[in-house]
Length: 69
Image 1 (cartoon, rainbow, N blue to C red):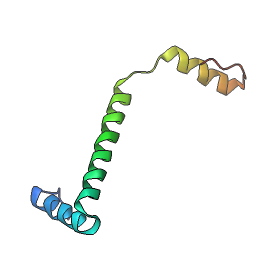
Image 2: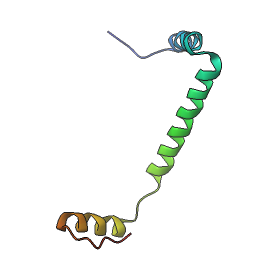
Image 3: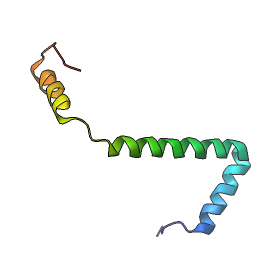
């Protein structure tokens, strides 16, 4: 029933958002969304150190209070 949004539909949605919130507010929201996506991608691409994560997970399971950071 609902398909993917085309460029016409996205344009209509953006115009409605601009009318409701104002163009500057929509631009701020878009910038914040872009920064959030960039941060997510950079954090997702950085692989955590398995040794440190394994030690923390093990100490949490055993209730050991000497966690290493």
